[in-house]
Length: 393
Image 1 (cartoon, rainbow, N blue to C red):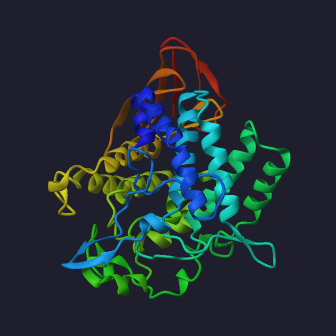
Image 2 (tube, rainbow, N blue to C red):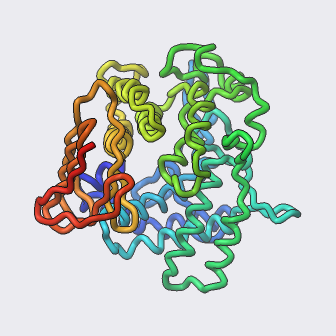
């Protein structure tokens, strides 16, 4: 939700980041309780910052263990990413960002295991997929940790010695990520490729809760996944994955994704658009839009899927419109579906109100004050006082 909130109400997004800072003491206590350094953030956070994830729940009339609070540790890197994204998108120098980066990096530095060959591993986690529990070297977790360590080293905040920053960089470079240069694919976790090669089409029409349909044990032994895991790296930290790897991973993991999570269709739409498949992206976007109104998962009575709404915003803005902020520059690289004549957006970034008007042959950017902006492949230019940066093709 934070990327959408940052573009609509930067002050509210800043409050979300400060919420984490105010609960840093609880996160440090959680890390110490695990025998680690730094800060480990909870999967489900209470008012005081302690983890209140339930230990068990009902499924199919049976009690099942809920392990996310214990093992879905990527939340710690996700919190750091959210803080960094807020600062980058808004251009804010909010002082809470550096402590969140450094304390999470210290946790990961104490969490990694080095093997005899000097390769770093993270054992016994749950990735965003959640159908496969307590796996080793989950690609999403490891690459997000790599980003976290590098971002903290680059922050050079108070209390970080050059030796500590160098250790973070070395550890980041040594992390296993499961990438295979021959195929361009990342293995979701160690041993994933050896699992039963089930595809969604073998089971049902998505979205489907495959664990409820086939049973948790069968799904855990298969390659079916609840939501994009490897693929989300290409959305959150595209600079940390191998160039050109989005296409091969979309082709491989797309047919294995059940979209059993409400977060899944919208983010898949964003990635399909970035991969040059905007018409397929539109199909996934429509699934995300229908999730609650059509009660596709049978859960609307319990409330709206708010994170799905944030994902829909990302699918349209970062996916179809290709909006990113990098190094203080707004970049736009549209990929519109054939069914759309155009797209008009209003949002806030870098302290400005921005208007974006995109069609298949024209892109226009306007802002209410000086804004460094660039169209795909062009050098950055300064947009001033509702003047228009325009390109017609």
